[in-house]
Structure formats: C-alpha cells, structure tokens
Amino acid sequence: MKKNLAIFFGGISTEHEVSIITGLQLIKNVNLSKYKVIPIYIDKAGSWWTGDKLTNIDYFKSQDLFKPKGLQALDFSSFLSPQSSKIDTAILCFHGQYGEGGNVQGLLELAGIPYQGPGVLGSAIAMDKIMYRQVLATELVAQPNFLWFTQSDWDKDHQIILKQIKTQLGLPVYLKPSRSGSSIGVVKVDSETDLKTQIEATLKLDSRVIVEKEVSDCIEVNVAVLGDQVSALASVPEQPIKSEELLSFADKYEKGGKKAGMASATRRIPAPISSELTKQVQALALRIFRIFDFSGVVRTDFFVNPSTEEIYAIESNTIPGSMSYYLWEKSEITYPQLIDRLVEIAEQTHERKSKLTSTFKSNILEKARI
Image (cartoon, rainbow, N blue to C red):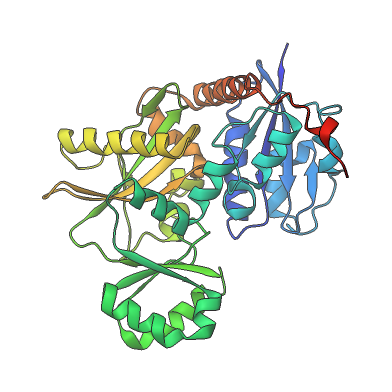
C-alpha cells in the first residue's frame, strides 16, 4: 500500500517563497508508486490549506499568497489529531522561524506523526544564531568572534553597543538577524557612520541581532549531513560563489536560469580545498550534527582558510534549501532516493522515541491533600 506522505511548506516567514520552491521541487521528485502526496500549504497569514493545485508552481504565480483561492481549508488542530490524521509520514520544507524553528515539529510530536529533520530543541537552537553560537562555544568549536544584543538593549543605550562593537570586534563586521535565513537582512558594515543606521534596519527584521567579525582569507564551504544519531553520512563539500562581498539572496536563488531554489546557485562541487581539509570539514559537520541531536538532512556552513586550514563554523540549516539534493547527487543518491531515506529516518526516529518510557508509577495522588 502507498504511504500518505504530507509535504508541508509556506509559513509565516520572509523565506515564504523559497519554501514554496523547496516544497514543489520535492513533490516533483516523489516516487508516486510508493507514496500518495498530501500537499499542506501554510499561507503568509498562518492559515492551513490543501489541494491538488498546490503541486503546480503556476498556481502560486497567480495567487495572493495571503489569500489563496480554490483550496480546501484545514483546521490543523483536528487534522493532526491522532484519531483523525491520515498522514503516515511528514516532510517539512519550511524555511524561517515559524516552521523551521520547531513550532510545527512540536505539533507533529503531539500528533504522533513521524517527520524528517531535527526535533523541537535542535530545530529551535539552530534557528537562533545566538543560541547556536553559544552552544558551539561550550563545545570549543571554532567560530568567528561575535557579540549580540536585543531590541531592548539597543533602546536602553545604543551608544554602549556601538562602542562594544568597535572595541571588541572592530570593523568591518556583518550584521545578521538572529532568526532569519537565506541571507535576508545580512549586511556588511565597513564604516562607523553606517553602523547605527544598518543596525536599526536589522532590528526591523528581528529583535535579536548578532554581530560577527569578518574572517579574512577564507572561502565559504558547505557540507550536508544525511542520517540520524545512529548513522549519518557527510556529503561532498561545496563552495557557493558570491557575486559581491557576501553571499546574497540573489546569489542563492536568482542566478540559475531555469533552475530554482538553492539548486540555482553558482557553486564549485567539490570545494577547492585539499583532501585532508575536506575530511576535517566533513568530520566537523558530523560532530555538529551529533551535538545538536540533528536528523534528516542538515547543511552546515563554514568559513575555511585553504592556506592555514583553519575552519570556522557559521550556521546549520535544519531544512536546507532544495534539501541540498544537488550535493547528494554527487554521492550518487538521486532525489527520489533521498526522499526514501528521509521517510525511513523519520519512521526510525519516531519508533525509537515511542519506545521510551513516558509513565512513572507513584502514590503521590493518594497522599495529596488539596
């Protein structure tokens, strides 16, 4: 019998359109002899929808993404209830905080539905660059120097923050919204005169901001990991090619002609680093995968100095753009095979969790006097 495979995408996020592309790419590559696809789209207002029209990119080109038409509305609370759910396994194609950050993962946990990717904790920490970096620091994983602050900190005394940036990091620096991806809101600041203005622009995207010191003489190298805490495989490293000083949204998603999503980016595969450095960056990607209890397919981004062989961890994408299928193709894993593996990982992870003890016998209620 075919398994009912729910593909979730969209969501309340600045990366909404990117998520649509990732979701539809995956749907296009599903082996329909094994699975019945159930597309589940969350619009920009947070409403849930399903319907066959959601599998066609042309539908989205003609719709108001806040008010899609011709679809079946879903009450997610009843749809995901253990009694009524018709989902065997879910694959999440969200990008951004409300979807990639653990929210929907928590709903699926409560509904008892297997899903690919990290659980609530790993998803939430990886989504917040500040928390992610702090965990890496405790594990002594090298990373660029950084500091962070919140909207409240800025409102109390922004002069202190400006001084800390100049004295502790120096210029240039990179400003990043703590809970955003796809390079949205990431900006390089070279001069003191621009610093305040750029920070205030970043705070419009997120109330938490990370400020990162530039690491010179490095290239960006990305490695995807596929698996779970029992068994995991690191992909061939890639070097994404940037057109300016930083890898932009346009570099990632708008450079590939007929291709879409992260598959459209210009890149070198394998990355132009030595075989020994390749092994080191793959090993570090696997180590980070273990630290955060990741599963599914997760892409970790690094800065690498080919001359000194220094490696700096930057961030992990728990639902990478295009599911990083272009990296797995280099390992002779086709996209349909990647989907099969994600379903398998989801089911195995769910089965292991279900075997954990969730009750505890005690006489506490007998003795209670309320």
